[in-house]
Length: 82
Image 1: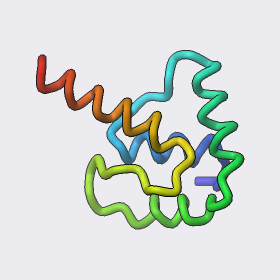
Image 2: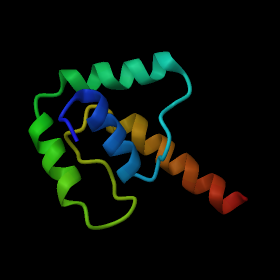
Image 3: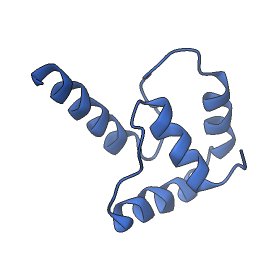
Image 4: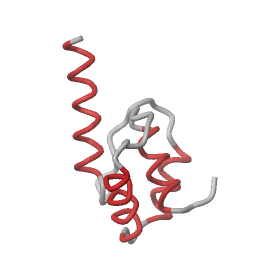
């Protein structure tokens, strides 16, 4: 997979159990734009390559961590309530 901001966002979302990208194009653009500002894109690629567990937490350095973790927690809460 090419190491681009879009692919890193897609990989991170998939690793966190967030299978689909947001349907809102502006939200996707914002995630990708924030990812492009990250000073550690290589670390993100290594993190994604090293995953051995399902639905881990986003790494502390991820510029999108707050948003992605919020979505992950909301999905877990919805599954428990369902």
